[in-house]
Length: 103
Image (cartoon, rainbow, N blue to C red; front, side, top):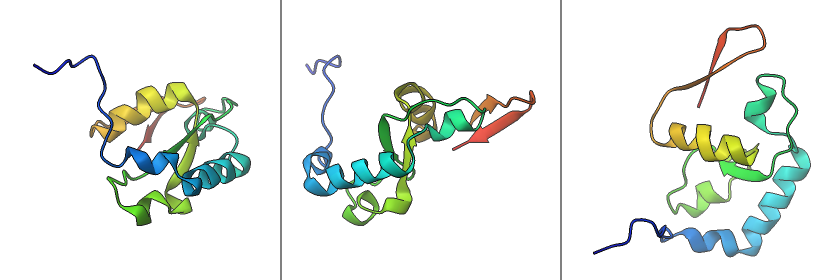
């Protein structure tokens, strides 16, 4: 029986241990230091996570494409982005009270 409490690493997780990723991450956070999702609602929040806009699923080309990266804060990455990755439509309320669809 598999213990579902222990997360399994994807077969391409090793890509995040490469010098390429460390360079891409450093560059992304230097050029986009604020959370992209938070900025949509005019909330200035430091980005700490570099996220792939489109899931790379092991594609080295997509993984290393700087145009496929966005900076997010950990709460946005761990909640909103995870829901988007599972196929959900996600909307946040803008400062004007109108919904903003993301993802």
